[in-house]
Image 1 (tube, rainbow, N blue to C red):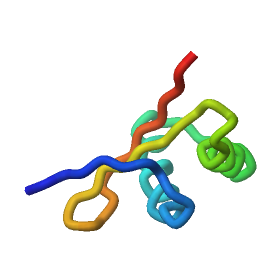
Image 2 (image 1 turned 180 degrees about the vertical axis):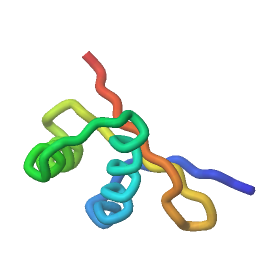
Image 3 (image 1 turned 90 degrees about the horizontal axis):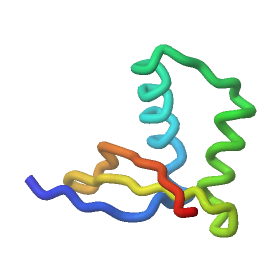
Image 4 (image 1 turned 45 degrees about the horizontal axis):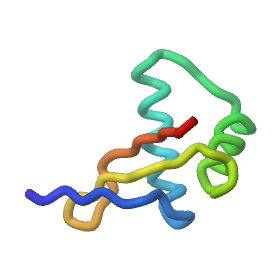
Length: 70
């Protein structure tokens, strides 16, 4: 099993949404659709300072992480 890590891309949005909602469910919290969209837009904005990575296994996205540098 090989897992590769790469930056989050626009075409990952649907899978990111699935994993994002799973994250929110795990932590027993909710966010509005507008807040989720804002989070996605910030992740896609290279000037905002929040970045996303995905883990891929056999070409399928199986994990996400978000991070920032200050």
